[in-house]
Image (cartoon, rainbow, N blue to C red):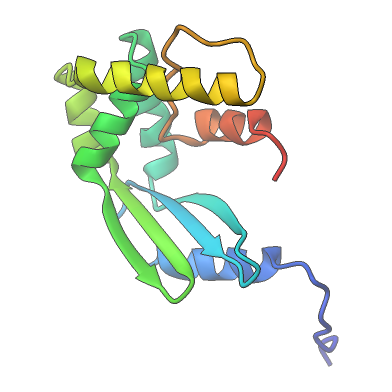
Length: 158
């Protein structure tokens, strides 16, 4: 007889099950950024890849970083291909990775106005939080598990 289910306060197992169900509804080679909105106003994001998406996402990231792409380029390319949907309190951003790879291969870059705007936002944020102003554009954010895992580890605690 299986052990009875007991409330634990840990949403991770439920989120992982929901994430697996969501991933099953998307084409192979897709990167999913799924945000679970909590009743208290907080949110937690999780990443998933459909079949082949993890390897293709890492390939995209290697190509993009070797080409000198940065966060502005990531935002621009992501915007071009993002598919947005929602299921209740869950927001899903899906990125089919073949078109993303094509953009990186073709040298698609973010516009300079957006790059300047991102730098201005980061400058103001640094001033408001008492940090030294930054004069660079942050690096490529990543579509594969190697870079997204790094982003999670380097993010401030929630």
